[in-house]
Length: 218
Image 1 (cartoon, rainbow, N blue to C red):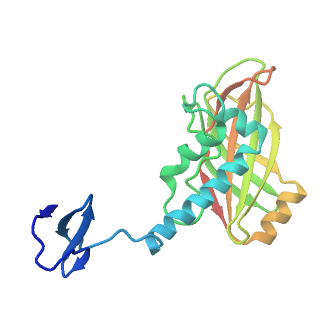
Image 2: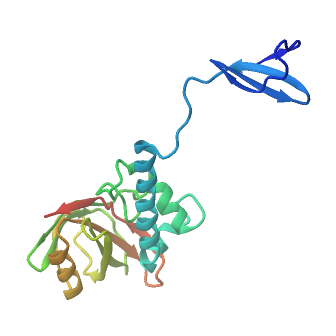
Image 3: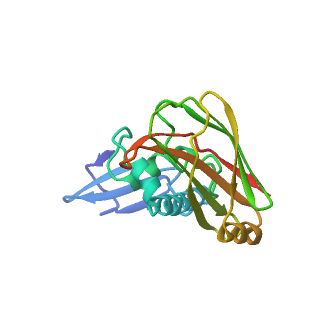
């Protein structure tokens, strides 16, 4: 920015052509007028804003499920509050304004000893294709199904316990859906289904958990 020492036209302040004049402490300075300005409210910024709105809703819903909140609150996951961890972990998966099947309902597991390959729904059952290499005595395998309706922009979930699966064997788990889940799926059109397995000891402490990519149904 240049300073104007002599002003033949008197005090100049404002824009003249491609020049911008400013008065600072009784002195006049001149600079080139910017060719482009940052504009808020553009289509791109609106998409990003809506994407973050949906991620906030996704994070808040997961944070309301105690078992999921406990996993995110595990000391092995970096961060402070469970909600912040959910948000940060999924932020990189915002590809559009919509909630994505790439989102995780539980963090990527530290050891990948439980792998979920595929989740399908047929009639009143969810079928889960998975493999576990995790071995521990007196542990409890809990499952969590989270359903997201693209049409209604709403969530619901179902929790339960399964028998301890065989180690080192690929297993097809069939889970009977409750009435709330069945009605939600039937009335929602396109649904994203997220599934995760969470292993706890008898005291409720988290031992490990599975991968949890979502899949689109219908």
